[in-house]
Each structure stands twice: as structure tokens, then as C-alpha cells.
Image (cartoon, rainbow, N blue to C red; front, side, top):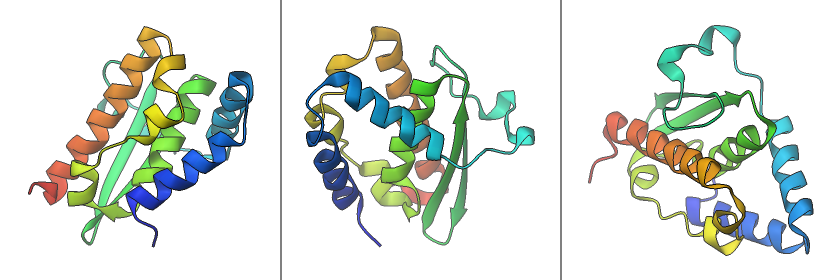
Length: 140
């Protein structure tokens, strides 16, 4: 199983392939399209990520020492962003998710190319995922 750092390195490599930011956005959108569909029963207020401009639902479960994540969103960019985060965090040890440094977001330039409201949503998604990890025993 690749580590969080290894998964980030793969994403950095993927994004260096694209020269234009529209191509990078399209890649993010494609990642969102590949995200498994979240059950309609899970699209409820309890799983809504607070602080996102669009609706983002994030579900997490503890499996052994690891955290599993599922998500959906009503906006294609938000869905792609949460898909990228799931790619990095899914099925990783709770302690590692809680402590992870997501330097890849700056390396691929995503933070510089999001509107302030989308950047806020990104941070809210990360905060929620780390909160789940802490709740599942990820405290050091």
C-alpha cells in the first residue's frame, strides 16, 4: 500500500504533465468523475462539509487502524478536489492522516489557482478528513 507521501508524489508527477491550468482543471474534473457514487442516503446534513461553497458530502469509516473515505459534491470542481484528497488519504492509518502535510497542493499550484471560496472549501475538506482521523484514534 503506497504511503500518503508516495501518493502525493504520484499526483505531483501527474500534474507536471500539464502545461496549462485549464488542462489541470480538466484533470481534476476527470478525477471527480471517477469517484464512486455516494449512496443517496449518505447525502444528508450530517455528512455535509461545513465551509464549502458547494455541497460536499464526506463519509468516513474506521477499518482496522485505517480510515476509509467516500464523498460526493454537487459541483464538478469540488467533486474533483475531494476525489484528489480521497486518493491521498483513503485506506491510510488514522495517525498518518491526522498528521499529514499536504505539500502537493502547493507543488501542483492548486492553492494559487482557486478562488478564495474554493480555497476555503479545500481547507474545510482537509480539516474534516483530519477530524475523522483524530476521532478514529489518530491522535499522537
